[in-house]
Structures are given as structure tokens and as C-alpha cells.
Length: 305
Image (cartoon, rainbow, N blue to C red):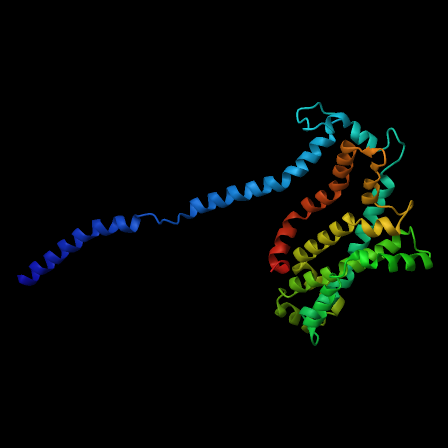
């Protein structure tokens, strides 16, 4: 009987303790993840707006007239017009922007293709089939980017002049290829290090050659990294100004060189410069949106570790 009483009292004590314990388990933590995610989202949107505001202002200014664009403070609610875009495409001057745009497209696309053709085998040798002292090799590639480009402008100009390569788009393509190759090898090495070794061993057992392995096995797996690398090389080539300004003239001038022509001794035509900058930026934006998914996936694989 005493054991029954003890059992009953123990049960009653346990039953009495449960209501008090349950609220403690249901009590919210001070570190609410929902609140933290909301704060992080607000900060991210503010940062994105901060960086996007100059671009939006450039687009708005491109639709204003020169008089409204030159006002101080700037007139936000001024009437919109397409005169700056018409003048950019040569309605009044007769100078067409298409040759510089085509030259930029040729230099960027061809140099990017050459960089990938050279960087992927080099990265394969440094990651999947590592050579001796591969870290020293990577450091050498990276050290070539430490020297300022302006330090090599004079030797390159003398070499281009003596070889008859001034104002030649193919010589500019060669310069862009050598400029982007170190960073491409460094990035592709990180991407190819993520390829499973078992897939390569299976390809070797099936008798696949190195070229077939690179094309059928490695390329599909590393496609996000290839997309990220190619887009970065394309952007670097498209935006390059110093080499194009020094090594080109009339025939091989690129779009950044054409853009600087709107800054003349007569003054700065702000609306025309903004219109030209919008048009010249469109190919890069289109390429970025087209490769958006693979770019984000590729950058998260290991390029920015």
C-alpha cells in the first residue's frame, strides 16, 4: 500500500512538474533566427541599392538633354529624350560606333576562347595530375599580375611598332590572352580540384584519351567554373582601356577608346557619355544574366575560397 501511495504521489509530482516544464521548453530563444534573417536581408538590400544607385543614375542621365544633365543640382524630374543615344549612333556627327563595338567583341570573345583552351589543360596538370612544386607554379602565375600594366606599355609599344603590329586587332587579342591567362589558371585549378577522381579513373579504364577525358568527363562537371572563368575574362577584356588606347588607332580601336572620345577640349558631354556607357555596358550585362546560374554556382565552388 505504501508503494502504491509512493507511486501515486510520484505520479502526481511528475504530473505537477510537467506543466511547469513545458512552458520552459516552449519559451523562445533570445537569438531568433527569423529576426536575424530579416535584418540580414534588409542590410543586403541596402548594400545592393547603394551599389546600384550610380548605375541607375547613369541610365537616367542618359535620357536627359545636355542642358538638364549639366544642371547643379541635377534635375531629376527633367523631360526624357533619346537625343543622346541618337548622337551616340552618329546622327549628327556621322561617326558610327559599330566598328569599335565589333572590335571589342572580337577581342573579348577570341581572347576568352584562347584563355580557356590554354588554362584548362594547365589547371588539369596542376590539380588532377599535380606536378612537382605546383604551388610555386601557381605563385608564379599570380605574380605576373602584380606588375602594373603601365610598366609594360612602353616595351609592348616598341615591340608592336617594330613588328608592324600597331593598330592590329589580333595583336590586341594576344595581349588580352596573356593578361587573363594567369587568373584563369588560378581559378580553373580550384574548380578542377572538385572533380571526383573516381570519374577520371573510370574514364582511364575505358581507354579514353586525355582530350576525350577533358571534353566528355571534366568539362561537364566543371562547366559552372568554366562559365565563371570565361565571364570574368570576357569582362576584363571588354573593359580594358590602357593597352587598347596605346596599341590601337583607327582600325582596331575598341569601345572604351571610343567612349573616351566624348571627352573633348570643348567640354564633357555628360548625357552622351552616359548614353555611350549604357550601350557599351549592355553586352557585359547580357552575358552576366545569361550565365547567372552557372556563375553563382561556379563562384561558390572554390574560386573565392
